[in-house]
Length: 410
Ligand code: NIG
Ligand code: FE
Image (cartoon, rainbow, N blue to C red; front, side, top):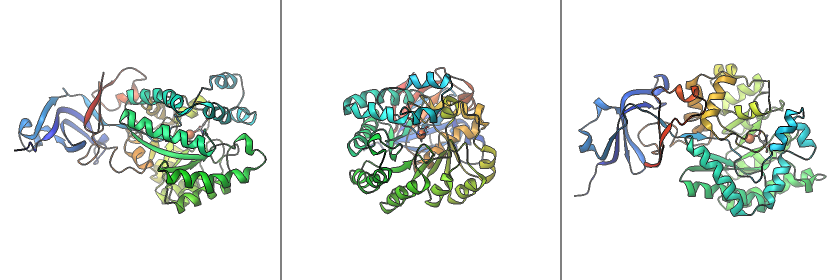
């Protein structure tokens, strides 16, 4: 007779489920069953329906260790070539991000390096960054294009992003960010570039199955509201969800625009207005907070966290891993910074890298510990969830489970 038991049963765990009404959805002396890559059962050990070995083929005790869902990094630009450490120097000497961009540095300098790199070279350089995120608990991540800015370059980035997912077994969502910066060859022809993005690049890459969402950099040094609307219109026609870099350096009303398109998320938001918050709340658009960029740019204007909280807008937290404004390779550190810099509670920050981050990517099958969810779990050398935000650095992560299989042990 075939074995109908679960594949695994983990016993004596402190489970931060992020479901239900309790703080962190915490279950002490908990158990979690895994079967065929998914979570089969979650609850208190004393509520298990049978003896452990009658329930699962393999049983192990975690000795009280904390278990959380795999963390989800819902905003990264981690596929790129080269680095921009010289800009770090320039900024420390007083240059602003805008000054550097207007002077031909910034995003377009990474575009030059990325266009030069072959697909394998881009893959090898970017894989290292994805591995670093995984080593601190990221089991699903979003990766944006936006350093190719021509059909071939954007395609290469998105293909590399997908390949990273296959190589590591992590979940990858790809976002097309054709409107990231104006490529130098279109300096006198902005409109033609937007047309190329809307009429050629986006539909071609979407047809190749490389686009899960569409994003734009709506900013004075990026693209206008009208240009952003054009790409959102095309995405909507193609049935692709949208998100937006909005209100990072100034208030252009980008959050209201993305909300008008029922966007998944509006990201950054330091300069977000009251009306933008209202529009996001009404549309169910997630606010993605990016403390790494706030920190690296030495920004002083805080995102309106208290007003977002009051309006009931879900807040996610992400690394924004990129070579210019956020060379950050730990989502757990981003959660810590969201507490220290933005005054999120540790529970809000941890919901922000799990359940709300899943929503910012349109995922319903991950981000919590509940039956039916993907078997993506983290086992930590910690007893209380707040410790994950409290410790700055250190090797807290003990085990990573992806799709019901243990892939990493400290
Ligand atoms: O999220 N602001 C636009 N995009 C990135 C920065 C990209 C870069 O500077 O290379 C961001 O901050
Ligand atoms: Fe970004």
